[in-house]
Length: 213
Image (cartoon, rainbow, N blue to C red):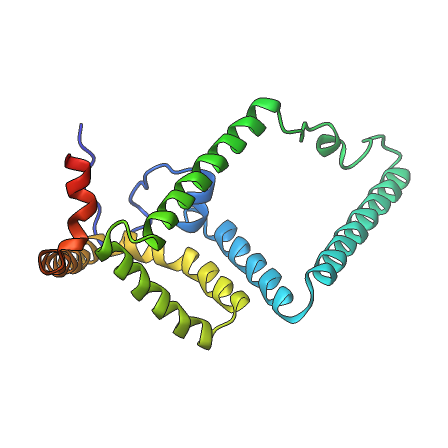
């Protein structure tokens, strides 16, 4: 049976579609977890913007170690006072299997290799002007990135991207109909301009003609 279409406004009483753990975070299925992830990520990124990576890793690891030692001592004292024998407070974590299986490692390596090969093939196609129109689009994108780089540094872009990761998907979900309509208009306009450029520049269709042969 088809699922009824949700309204464009978020309604907590409506049953939301199931998603994976990452999607659940960025779509704010649990506000507490999503807020904690957003805040922790921002703290880490701001720390990286202010200090070196080595300092952030050292201080972060030291803070985690101090917290673990303090909690272990607290639990040991509590057990001694209450005369209980609950064992190690992190026993469930120590017994948990955190190793990466050979199959999982091979799967990740194969996926990364496939993505890398696809990216290299696409970059070769664009830089060697296999399709003139696509290469011109790529050139416009690079030209726009020069202005972005002049205004923001890398860590600032990562911070903005992290914020966008937790805001844009949810905003799109809440206003899907309107956004899709505007995107379709923009896509149609881009396709129209691309068609005119391809018709005016025969070199833009060279690769397609060679493939047909």
